[in-house]
Image 1 (cartoon, helix red, strand yellow):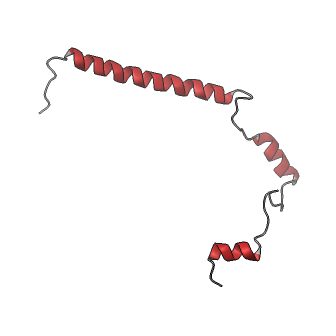
Image 2: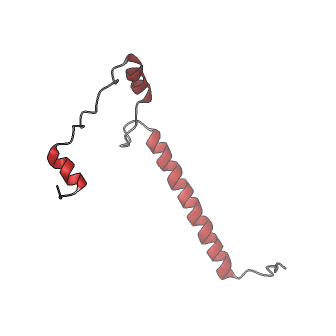
Length: 85
């Protein structure tokens, strides 16, 4: 059923070594990236979950739209539905 591998050529061993080296380099790259992402000031935006939950519990964020939110004007609403009246 299954054929046994009787011998490996040097070309096959070099290919397997290349695949192993590539896999190892990917694992190391991702490991370093994850460690850097956890550091303060790493350039990644992180949500301060404790502060957010505290503001929600106090009621500071209830019934309030985001600062960027505004109701759609008639022109914007027509543009979303299509140009036809």
